Length: 233
Image (tube, rainbow, N blue to C red):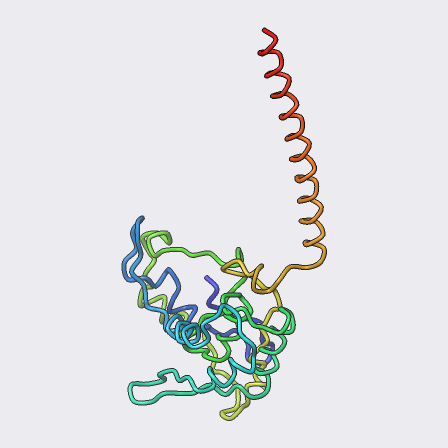
């Protein structure tokens, strides 16, 4: 279900908390018509970004100070602000470079960037077709783990040998990053089209125009001939 990250050779397998919490298998109620699941805190963060930017794309110089001043609740009494200096700033600029200087807010790469900026709130966006959404009922009658099963897995687990103080870079914290982009909306107008696509559209338009003019001339001559014959009759 996309909640396990096995990309870091240093840290080993890790559970991606927001992917696990927001997985379909954790929905409170699941029927054939609707699901009742945990609310996504990342949607609220993205909504604030959309409202502040007001456009579907934005430059990094606008996004970085905006998101840097946003906070996410880490506990009942504390909020945490993201640290964007370093790798996160470089990654956001790379996303913008791919798209001509602007970052699409509704693309997979920006959603991936938000996951690393707000790792507790935003899930990691897997590529389409990589994971499957399965409801609790689809697991069968034994979809709830028994106490004996949980004790068995806990007994077989090993304590982590990671040091208490370690930086994100040392943990290879962005080892799961992938450069593939996927859009949830049509960005052809905002990001522009390549010259190859423009050339194809220009040729298609010219062909349609030629056939349209030719069809109109043939239609006019047919109608004119019909009128003459009717007058002769």
